[in-house]
Image 1: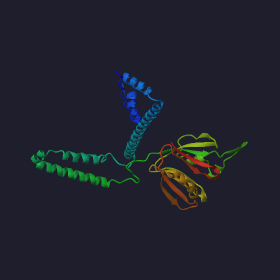
Image 2: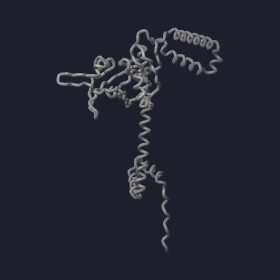
Image 3: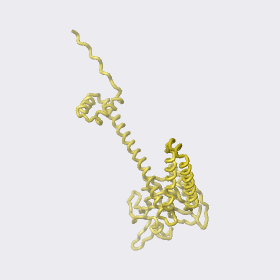
Image 4: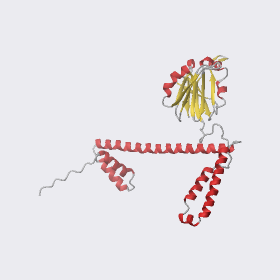
Length: 312
């Protein structure tokens, strides 16, 4: 009896098979099922093995990206909640600020309204007179609370969420020149005082030094709180400055330097403001930027090189 031809095995799309193998190799808890999948993978042609390996790598990277995105969203949510807690504590601890009275008025009113909505219709029919009196009392209490809130003075600049401090590393070229016992610093001469003294209000750690291919750099760790900043007047040239306005990093530079700086800030620039010359200080531009951890900027310093700003 002639041998019957065996039907050709059904070939599965390599991409689909990759997903099946991914589940069998990494999700299956049965060692036998995993071993069988490994044997099937080893029996494939080299080209199919390579393709499936690429598919598995893609799926693995895709899952990691989703995890990272989820963690980033959770981190942003925690930052918002932390800022709200800080703002509330600041309001309670500041003299003349909000007191505990009325802090949860909105929640109390909402709870009162929800309770009223949940009253059973049968009870309303039985207690019409009592309900009318309760509603009048509730309405009167709510009106009194609203009047108290209207009379309560609002502090200037109060926002729903308080911006946190911006932490940056200021990287400055070392301009000190030493000839024997003579030390000369042209940057200090131009500023009229040491740079460390200028930055002292917002400097949080001692100055460190970093070695680069273009020479040594002094590194100053700065913490600029909301409404704070530092500025260096450069006379007719303008001024250099860094400030924190509601979480935005405000960079003040001479108008000529802004022409070189603007192309580097397109990704993070929120607003550009021109400030005319006044009181012996030349025209400057204030560049409001929305920065995040890892951003790096370079501010031109003319003959002194560039001033590095690294958000940490």
